[in-house]
Length: 360
Image 1 (cartoon, rainbow, N blue to C red):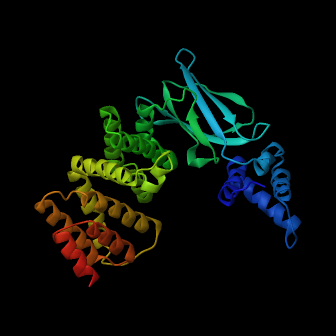
Image 2 (image 1 turned 135 degrees about the horizontal axis):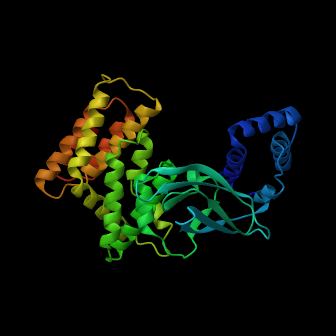
Image 3 (image 1 turned 90 degrees about the vertical axis):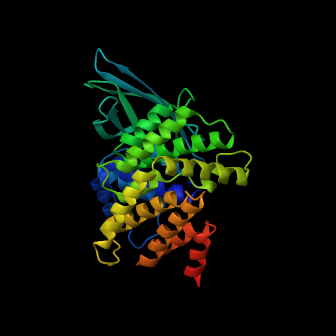
């Protein structure tokens, strides 16, 4: 049995990706028809999915006996003359035989940033396969593993991360997961560079461009995705990438990157914060738990964290403390209160006074 409960759930989700939601529903109906009230095995579940949809899922069953996280490597090429984009995928895992891996892919035009091929599920069933997309009018950037379609690691065949492609996807990708993932990898690279005192101007430029594009995008309708995409990786997430962890240096480097972004885009961040605040005030203090309201609060709190990281001078401390205190006093739910209190807790001077007043 696949030995991680979380990844076990991902295996179930892969059925949904491979068979489509309608096919998965058919499989579930047959599964309950056959086994309701009785003990079952993973193979019983797989058989119901296969029989209901008329597909062979024997190879997919290898997921249940394969430990560890598989790796999928990729390389691509574009033939302008024929208008063909080729994507080569290879897999490596602890299984002696290739796994059946659903890899959701979309293609985004390099020039316009428009999606020219919407999400398509590629079924990687061999050690190496090449998939061709025809009638492509210009070179494209592939968006690979959309929606985290399989619990695998995706790395370039060359072993060299193309930061320009990451920046492009972080700014332009229509898939929320890949937009977030690309931004996180850029953030991580810049934070580690800062920690080693070897910050690259190019990486910094990529991070800044991805940040402002995400912040000001008019095409993002999901506030939560926007909030996650703007948030640097947590210290615990970053620590997982290091062989030797220096907690103090890591915290300082992450804070330095966050503060630099906040200073560069302070006007734009504050404008968005005020826009979200006005939208919340228009609801006259009514606390809502729909997706839009939850996402709006999440995004506003991310922006508050950026704004309150600017606190070097007495004037900046005062402005940050006033902003966080105003949110704390106006909050209609614990989410906003805790975010404001967290911002105040890291302040000295007026921020500390405001924090103590809030607590008492």
